[in-house]
Image (tube, rainbow over all chains, first blue to last red; front, side, top):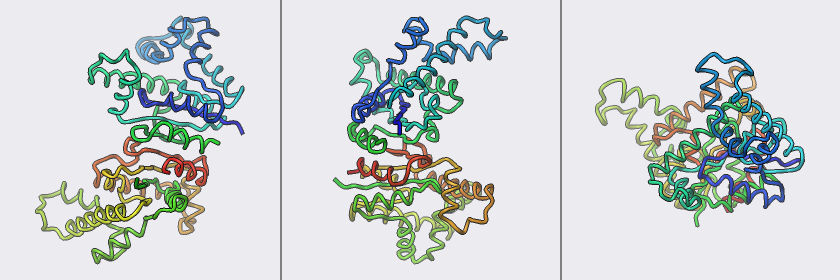
Length: 200
Length: 200
């Protein structure tokens, strides 16, 4: 049986770390930002641009489809976004075909729904996410608590919007996942051991 | 370190079965309906009445405190409900003091919040819950699908209302739990093994 694990995660919750350790524990492939790099290569767009579209795409889309009359295929930005979305779907499917793997983000739970992946959602209480961000991201060390909190909320709002746009589902709604894990109290290592047990 | 595990669960999701097996796997006590029996004994109310209050209490309360002027201590129903709530809190705390245990329902996650329990919430997709109900509860075998679905929704609505009344929190909101487990796809045995790993 193939083992495909998808991870949705709140910013600062430790989802990426869990994904990475879990892949190591299970001896399977791990994909996260590699996907953006590969999409950039395939579409020949700049990597920063791909990342921007994957984080902000739906905003532009909303403005375009709701704000004014829109002629299909006439808007180059819309077309570029679509190219990137299509490539994302294709790539995530290719990766899952190639071998067992852990895929972080990218709406992979939805893209791979026919493959019956183990769908995880990692989340945490706000103070825990703030503490984690302060430890991991020195570039945010000058943020006040208020700024940091707003930053975390912003990133998650964009993730939610992207997921909703791409899948038509609500990001973080527990019915879209098999297991939702609060990292506020347990250690990442304990969590990984338990999930590995479920995935083996 | 003490091991206290609390389980919130949607009706028909298999939460009780998971709790029972988990307690066996960990070799610790398991409490579910025993709590109602014991409260009845202590308060000298009929067991059916205790169960009714614990399932419907908040409705009466809402009607009384919002619907008309209310004089503290004057309403015997309100007083009886309060006796039962207080006894529930006391008993759940006593049980957790006595030994490691798994407690199903009873807002135990909230009552025991100072003991840092492992807080689980067990849920599932509606078709899965319906199938499970049909298998487990012969008394519902004459329900149409529509009736069964409504029955499941009713029970959960009452559980949600009770929890909200008792704790001021939203029932099933993942931030109130450490682990939310969707039983629609994995087997109960696999789930129990994984949680035991996390709890050990």
